[in-house]
Amino acid sequence: MKSIKIKKILVIVLAVLVLLSGSFIGYRVISEQQRRKQLIAAFSSEPGYESSLNERYLAYHDRNEGVDIAELLVLVNAGIDQLEIEYDRRLAGFVKAEGFKPEEVQRYLDYSNRTKADEATVVGLVSHGVDQLDVEYGDRLIAIMNDPYFLWNRIGRYCEYDSEHDGDQLNVRSLVERVNCNLDMIPKNGDFHADPAKGKQILVNNYYDLAEEYVPTNLVDVDKAYSSKGARMDAEAYEHLVELISEARRAGLKVTIYGDNGYRSYSYQATVYDYYVKMLGREDGEKRAAQPGYSEHQTGLAADLTVSNISYKGYNQAKGFKWLADNCHKFGYIVRYPDDKTDVTGYTYERWHFRYVGVEAASVIHETGLTFDEYYAFYIEQE
Ligand SMILES: [Zn+2]
View: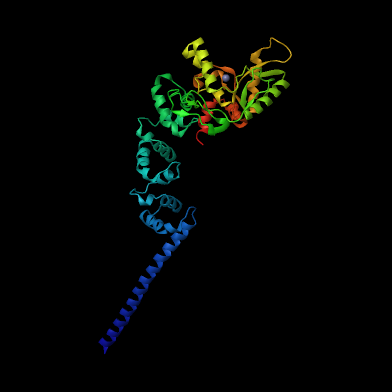
């Protein structure tokens, strides 16, 4: 009797155990589902969440427990979870940097190990190939990158120019300015061409040339009152020149175009160039007159001006040109070849040569003291 009772008890105990373990397994299944639900809820409250990536978020989370949810989303969205790269706290910084490419992550890590630079800088330098150059990451390179007119796409050129001019002790501003003005390139070599699509901001200099057949589409005749020899100019540039001349008149100054020196055709420029080269020799002649195709006068946007006093002769011209230099930007004009920039413009100081670039560009150039060459590199060419 006793043993039967014991057997019964055993059966009951076993049954209870079986039931308990079953519900335990059930509980575990439910808790796993709940855990996934909770995680997905957490993912979905983060910016950039994509429901199609749920499985990858979960898998990356399980592989790298403790990684911040927001960071995890950033990494998976960028495809880092698909790479054979272990989690590293720098990864999110790389992903957020401009120019990031998932296939370059190993190079970022290597360069970061070498330089200890911050993640955005590492991505910038690697994406421009600086990690492959023989350039030390140090104060000089950092100073170059901090120049206000630093251009990422010229970083290799800054480094090269700097190493070639090691003994010159160039300050960083001059170094960046020179490269921005293409002084590291050979002039008149056909590397670049003037781009008429840039409108009033077209750059023409010793590096950017115009085709022989280029003629501006909207040339107008300048009134005889402003050009005794009958110049022509771009219509918009002329309209603004007339306003400048009127303002000068109110200041007691008489401003006119010197001779017919507004628009010059390619062939006319050839005549002017030959004249100066014959008179001064090639080197000095070229500082006064551009080779045909390389003159701003071919754009119709430049004019050589004279200035005198309305009421008396013997007026100090320098004062008149000073007034023009101080005021021309209000009408969209700049002194194109300033006194202190002859090394970067390639021209001796021409206080008479004014160029129309539009009021906005002229104002920036007036305020910053940039040459138009550098303004173009920084503000126009990059667009
Ligand atoms: Zn000129």
